[in-house]
Amino acid sequence: MHTRLKLFHKAKAPLAGGFRRADLLKLSDEEFESNHAFIQWAFPTNERSYHNFTVPELDLESTVELAQDQLFVTFLEDMTARFLEFLKRNKHWVRTHDHNHLRISRALKSIRILHSWELANWFYCQVLAYAGDAQSVMPKAYSIWEQKLSKKHDCSAGSFVGLAIGDALGAPVEFCRRRTFQEVTDYRAGGKFNLPAGAWTDDTAMSLCLAQSLINEDEFNPRDLLERFSRWLEFGENTSTGKCVGVGQNTLRTLGDFRRSGNLQAAKVGLRNDGNGSLMRLASVAFYADAPLEKVREVANQQSKTTHASDIASECCQFLAELVRRLSEGQSYSDAKEKCTEHDWSRSLKSILEQDYLTVKPDEIKAEGNVIDTLQCALWAVENSKSFEEAVLKAVNLGDDADTVGAVTGQIAGARDGYSNIAHHLKVGLLLERQLYVTSQFLN
Image (tube, rainbow, N blue to C red):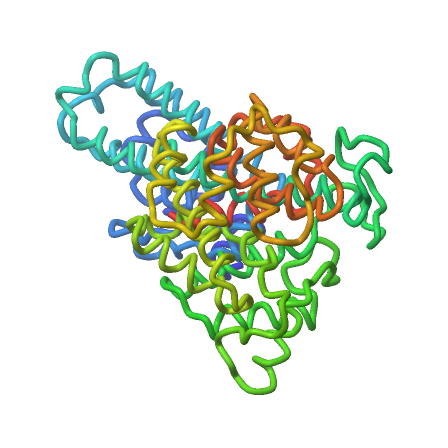
């Protein structure tokens, strides 16, 4: 964590305009209004403050550390409540221009990235209630607030964390034939890799590598991505248990080529190039930097080719990235899928997109490692479910490559339903959930 942030939030140094962290909750309304140096310390974000240059910007690592600190989380909740008390009792801010508008903007983003979309949304709803019918007199403030907290942020967390939930639910029954294991209804320990309950595998680890690369590079950089994949493979970075598990053959071979020769694209080898390894990790591509759809499809294609020399894998990635993006923009699932299907896809992909999955039985689909089969299973699970939890459970209970089918299903269902509609027990039972959630919020 940044040294000054650590001094303030952990060592209790008086850096907020002379105030210590505990002092901020005791400020009178008059002090709250007249002191301008504390709000950036109370509600840190990854944006530079142009009013208090002493406050460091949050980076991803510092944000994850704070979000995992229960004492900080409690402080943030208390500070949110204190800010609302101030806004409720003092209505001078309900006007065209007021410095509290910037404070509200900062608080919205800070609460969202450090705590949850749900708490930020509750805070925002209270602000709107206190403002009453004043939207017409402060349209600029409303416009900025809606950029700090939107449904897209809820959907990006839903898709990114949803990927990991599907992975973790499916991991214990990966490689198990259908109907040979006890039905999955929640997280459980065990499986081929003997993982603890809520642990995830290569699907989520590689997704974290991809997200971190996009965040840190601010664009797609294949070398940086492959270096992150290599550190995951060799040193267990971005894993839920400290150990790399579940790496696919295409990925293993490609990373070997990269380390030996520096190749940035996978080369075709034999007939087994159409694996699902580039599809399972995709979620972050749909959200990073609010890129236009054309750029989303381009990056989906590029990231696929780093490990999979397969045109059909690339197509599936492009389709999934666009579908997830459209869902995050508020389109219904049927409308989003219809728009995505309009492209000139190959016959193999087109055939699974045009199926009526309400009439397809589980025994008619294969949950194996082929990318088309995996996407087909995910579409079947989503279209035969009414909730995120129902979708991912249907997916992982297909068995075989259960973790990856669950991960792809989680990306779609999470974008469709949003993080706020994922069952609480699936969030709290997921290992390193805070790291995953915070990472999703740095993408846009």
